[in-house]
Image (tube, rainbow, N blue to C red):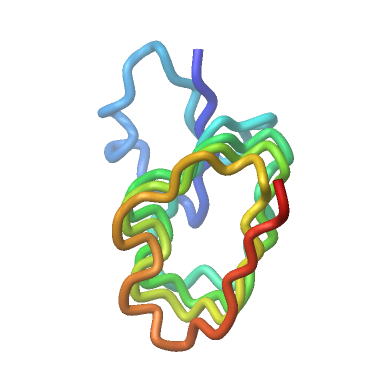
Amino acid sequence: MFKIKTYNKISKIGLQVFDDKYTVGDEVDNADGAIVRSAALHDVEFPESLKYIGSDAFNGALFNAVKLPKTLICIGQAAFRSSALREIVIPKTVEDIGTWAFMDSEKLESITIENA
């Protein structure tokens, strides 16, 4: 069973693509992954259990900085593409960063990868 936390009130109709292997919703605790509905998300607090940020999850998001949890293993393809992100610290637990993860994030000034 995978737990997916949603942000910005994703329609239940849109969540019907997930089968019974997933628990999905905005009240999910100890999430394995996250998805977002709109670019108007300014503040996000990732759960400490988060392991995966999916492809295009925060494409175009307007937040300036995010704190990624120490449990994160993967940042998906184009996860933060075209975002307003200015800085990000990537935990040493991250094993994979997808292609174009930060592409077209023109305000991005700093990417720090923690020492392994």
